[in-house]
Picture 1 (cartoon, rainbow, N blue to C red):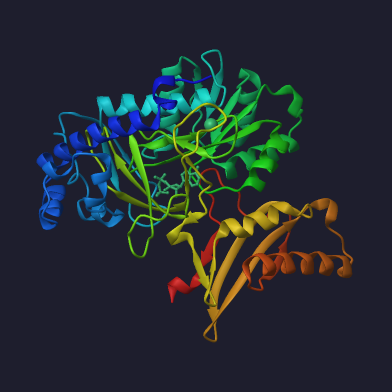
Picture 2: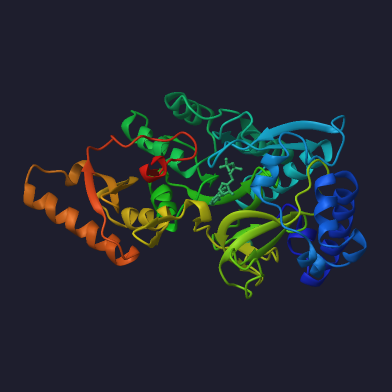
Length: 433
Ligand code: ADP
Ligand code: ZN
């Protein structure tokens, strides 16, 4: 099923026409109502008259997270506060929070794009959706919430936490879909396994997972453990929230709703667009936002775009899995390491629980690279030799994928902290020095 076939399956040429029209309008709006954007455009010697088609987007200046911080809290609003009906703030994974404001129309567009995602996952008005993303300033909870209501489904506004109750109600109410971070889904799966309710008693069929990077191996793990189909949902506070894009039944890339959020991929060093299909930093321009439009916002998320028509029939551009944020990348002894690479290896090995914590430090001017992992109870033994063999096996696997030898520390099952929201996979003690 497709929620908005006209848009989701629009011919590229028509989409570009629509984007061109909307780009012109949003640039005018930003220029006339936000001194910040006007000044930046004046510095480049351009006015809205220079923007006549979507291809002109490259003339526009970039916006970065620091700009939002410098203009905290409301400096980037392009609508008067009397038109702003809701505020959200980012959870601040990487520093002090940033604030965004939505007009009534912004909220209805957000609900529209989440509706497209839900429909692509096979969720309909007859279904119950348990929203276990946090409610509050974080966009996850309320973002999904409005989408479910918009398609006429039944929303269970659980928010995160209270894991036993989550499971009880998911079972008793018969939720068909669960929306939360992949790491929390894992924790819920673990808790179900330990509970006295068999998995077969749940009506759950669909997982709506995002808000943090996750891997294909994590998808397999979640699909098996919860007996569901697990789909990606992508978004960020600055652009709207969850639902900037979502996967379809093909599970082969996340469709981005490019009639509202125009994506580009740039080289983060030269800031030039990359060759089509190449990996780089994702940049968005909001084409319809009133409250707080974002012009060429640098997400710092690393991915690539696929413009081929998808087997599902949608033409909306697809985004590959997010490798991570450029600021998640660790440089350890000169080698670039993404936590997602470590995750991928650990989830491939049946000896380990799908949990890990990377601890980096600097001792005698050399970086240390420790990875804490939990051996599954059925592989745990007092026989030193067997444990050493398992340890050697994972050390070799990581070394071959990353090119760096980790110091593997095997810890007791259950001892790595479980997350109810975005998981913390890295402790970098070097930053404290
Ligand atoms: P914060 O910046 O405080 O984490 P947000 O909730 O706005 O606040 O986080 C948005 C970021 O979360 C994205 O820029 C991206 O890095 C990550 N993210 C969101 N959804 C996904 C997803 N489906 N896959 C990978 N990363 C995601
Ligand atoms: Zn598709």
